[in-house]
Length: 249
Image (cartoon, rainbow, N blue to C red):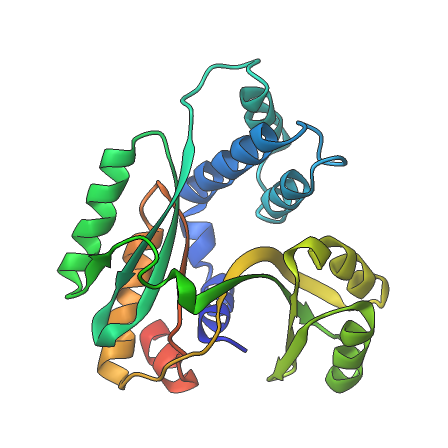
């Protein structure tokens, strides 16, 4: 299982996301609005919007907030126009980092992201400088419950998954983005618990850093994720369990 996915699970278990719930709702609302503007404002007819709404419900975002974000996309409520930008850069130890941003102020977003890279001893890169190290994938994290993890992995492959990784009883399923919803539904029908399902940027290969550099990368990713304009942060670093536990402690 990728280091960043493990870190995301640790943060969930520690209630970090609950502590930042207001900020989480802001980010989710932006994703819902952008998704609705790119397609129909109907989750049943818009896959990206359906995923965004599902994620918002999993975060216990109030229904009225979800509906307001969709109405904003349809022009029924006021609000700023958002654009999506991906910034690229190098973190401590040469880690490749992608920063997915949804913002109403490109200059502000670029300045804040660049400042955090610089403070961490990294640097912003030109477009394409690290993006080639990643590929778009659907990522589904599954808790198999009473099903044997190896059997669950085989079922995911039968459903059309590209790859499956098992670790510590949890399963991470990789799919083509277009197959994400179909495979998620198929896994849910087996009785397994789907902990998360989202479109992601997955590194084609990962790198190991020494513990000091790895912790500095985690700190940088956390600071970037705290920015209101930043939706997601991806890296090609494979964090060891020891580093994650030390940082979480």
